[in-house]
Image 1 (cartoon, rainbow, N blue to C red):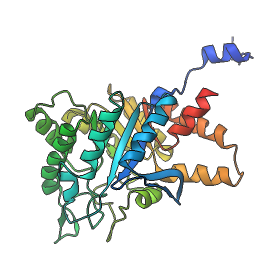
Image 2 (cartoon, one colour):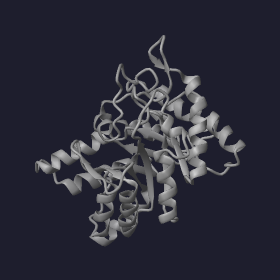
Image 3 (cartoon, helix red, strand yellow):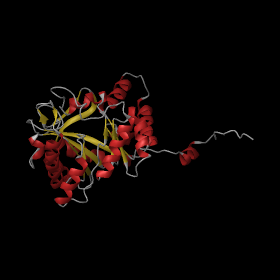
Image 4 (cartoon, rainbow, N blue to C red):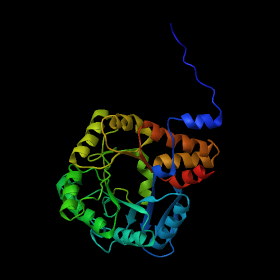
Length: 323
């Protein structure tokens, strides 16, 4: 006999007890963009509420977010001088190394993740050394300097590194380099499935990393390829990644779920700048119930299988959760 599924009418307290998916402040990593100078806190027009900050302002911001229960950040550096190989990122006195040391000194309880890439540091805006003949990134040459950058971050005190350039074989190279330098226990969060997406536009404003020619489609993922997307993450798991990631998040939740079902590693999503800006603009124009839609979006990431959410909304969400 067919038994009708009965959707139980629950009061508020019971509903919270049986809820299948929950969002907590511990799920989040908050992105911060640091540049040289003092007293600098410049809002980005395309990303309201997101700022380029000098190191002293980043330290203040860390103090503020800790009051909200946020203890994890990911740092992006914006150097004063850019060149063809991103030399500032390979220097122990570069902006990112200085920022790591300053944050860890002022807030030793802050978990500091570093974005490991070159697009913010190169004058051409691509994620590594350019192969002039083919006008794209030279994968193997970029791997060598990526290992150098990883050691710089480790020495400065990073708690985890997150290579975002999508170079083939980068996890294996970084794991070997870190192990040989004595950083066997420093985890790697891989941007293991990163799509060549149109959702990154506002990020290039805040990070000042728009490519001066071409695009990044030759080394990032085709948004149409599901099987390849899963294979990329599984490959990084085999190379020694500690955490896998899908970027962007919102348009790729099917990929998040499929990877989650095929790995035992923790899963991160990057709720990227275009996703953030769309909700911000819709909220500012009273087109949506902003807080409700933000929380519904965060729930969708968790429901799809994300253990970690990197999001520009993190500070706002923390405030919402405190209410």
